[in-house]
Image (cartoon, rainbow, N blue to C red; front, side):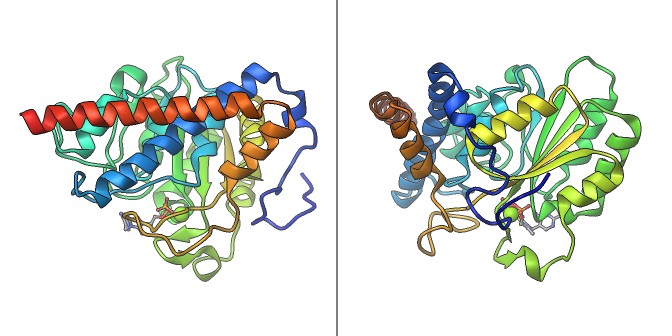
Amino acid sequence: MTHSSSPRTPNFGAIPGLAERATPEFSLALFRRMALTRAFETRARQAQADQDVRTLIYLCLGEEAISAGISMHAEGAWVLGQHRGHGTYLSFGGNMERLIDELLGMPSGCSSGMGGSPPIHDMEKGIVGHSGLIGDQVPVAVGMAMAGEARKVVTFFGDGAAEEDYVLASLGTAASRKLPILFVCEDNDLSVLTPTRDRRGWDLAQVARGFGLEAVDIADDPWLVAHWAETLMVRLPALINVRTCRDVWHVGIGSDGAPEWNRFDLVREKLAALGLGEQAARIEAEARDLVEAKWQERLRIRSAS
Ligand SMILES: Cc1ncc(C[n+]2csc(CCOP(=O)(O)OP(=O)(O)O)c2C)c(N)n1
Ligand SMILES: [Mg+2]
């Protein structure tokens, strides 16, 4: 693949005309997943500011497009996420009430209120939560792919986690054994506060290709992410490295100012240019209303118990 731009730009790896060629139904369904995550994370941020959520919280604000895009073409797969996984959980259909209950520390939460933000799971949907050691979900995912079931596996992990030896070994094993697994690196260029250039001199997609995996390196344009998910889910094993921006601190709700790019705004602009602006605005409003109603309901139940 050739790229006309540097890796950390919103158009990295762009394929001209992708959004224009998508059906309106597809574009709006993709945006609905992004909008749900955006609304949820915005409300969860407020809940922590209000001290309704008192445990550590890892928000994926800014990174919504990755899980939204992958989930459009990964139905039925096992899904393993990392600590910043609310968007993965929601995009793949995880139960929102049980996620809120988990953040509120309620026994009805998806981890009985004992785990909080990172280890969220919904086994009915095949979503497996994170233990807390970055990247350890990747060898587990490879093990699941080796189990020989017909079910494909998708595992998300961060650019920091990509440096763990067991993650790199997992890429090698998947390539050697031709396992039905998609590796998705949510590359926000940060491991806590350390940028990639201060941590390593190698490139994940190139390393993956060296192991024999098909691999692409792209920005987090949701149409582009969905395109590569569709292409690669039938050519597994494969890896997608997605350049993205974390809007908030590593943990908690603070912010150091504007991100390098605002993907959500860019998608809104693209939808408007496609003549879908009004429908997109309605989808956003519906997502906000739904999320607010669920939070209010769960907060009432908690205070009554
Ligand atoms: C094995 C291990 N080493 C170190 C840590 C401490 N730690 C928690 S999150 C994190 C950074 C993770 O960065 P990345 O994988 O890029 O995910 P991001 O937070 O950027 O989404 C580190 C080093 C850990 N949890 N597990
Ligand atoms: Mg990172």
